[in-house]
Image (cartoon, rainbow, N blue to C red):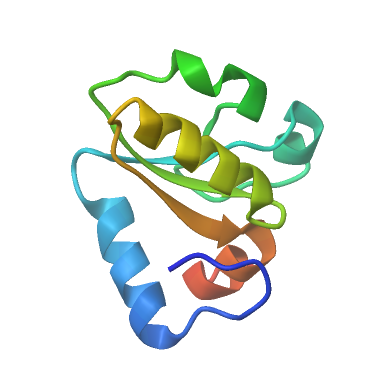
Length: 101
């Protein structure tokens, strides 16, 4: 679902919308506090990349950042700890996909 350059198609957007609404999945913004302050997705929790190790190990996480690179790093870290996580990509793509613009 994630990428750093291509747009999300309608099917991926619909799947993402349903996952955000599902109980158990938490939408996580891994950008800096300044980036988060200047705009974030509705329902997103702010966990900067440097604090990602403090996330609840019983959770399931949908991760995003500005370009998808930091969220990929976070996903890899969480998966090494057997914590379900998906890099859902870049903030700008997601804003379009979720109709937040």
